[in-house]
Image (tube, rainbow, N blue to C red; front, side):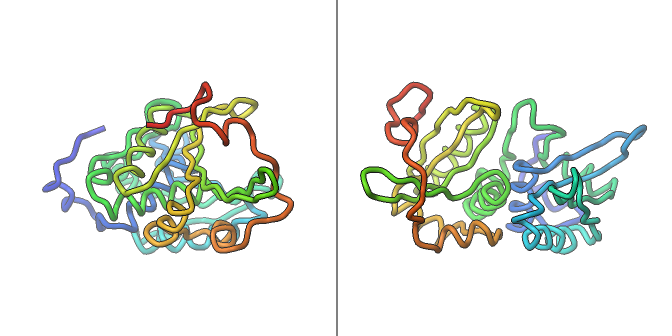
Length: 239
């Protein structure tokens, strides 16, 4: 994947702006870029939950139209439980890969420098990532209910990158390791100040997240897990 100097960004067929940075966040979350001249061809795919993200799938489709002047297909998959937004456009997909979208999520997830070094682009990227691989949860402890903002990922280096991006934007994140069937990491924001800063400076384009960011904590929220309470526990990174 090529390293791009700032002066080279004007060479692409679409604008390098906050909308593109948000699209990159979406792709780093629940997207896949395919470059295969023999089998599936050149393809972008983004998978969303059919039950809760119908409205968001329309937002993602419209974002693709605005950015790339393509009309993505939006269809149901996996027994209608998943919405897939996808399009085929060889030159656009080659350009997206050159700009920094990886071909899979198994290796290193390296956020491009043109995003990391630009605060508005970083905020837009984090919004797209949050809307696909993150969310808001409510948890209770000793009679109180708390709201947490979380972003999940499998790669620790990627989690550290996201944490550092948030630190540069004035947040106070920590990283939690979780096990089970979906082992990986969570970047977590717990402070009320961070949640207000998120609403003001990053926000969400996903209605299901908006309702939880703006709504009152739920009385029936689950109890705290030990890893949510104490960042000094094994598996945490809090620096």
